[in-house]
Image (cartoon, rainbow, N blue to C red; front, side, top):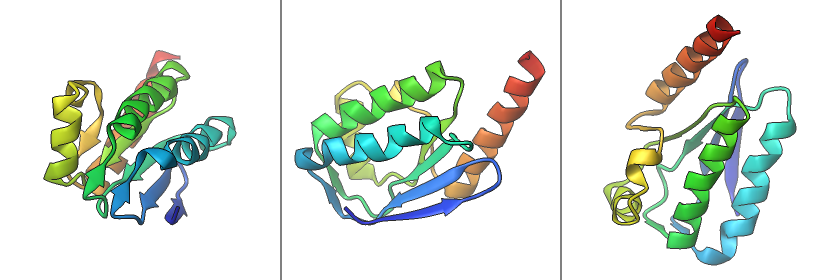
Length: 122
């Protein structure tokens, strides 16, 4: 699995550089993303700009992973989903559960806003 990882001060952007996410990549993606919950900078922007097709197993797991991040008070935002991928999430009735944005910079904004919100609530 090819990924590009860009660590910023408050979050990490992970860009999956594949065109398809088949079911056999589910465990690899899960391990990659959940490992960030143990890091000093646990907040993730997952960029799907290259992904044109996604298996339903991975789509379901991504929604679950996002929930795990939020349960642990960490941000997880998906960005730049192609319409074909968005349709899969919608058909699985997961789209409303996801925190996703059209652009990477909007995802950064959400993570920064959530960070401010967490600070205010402490």
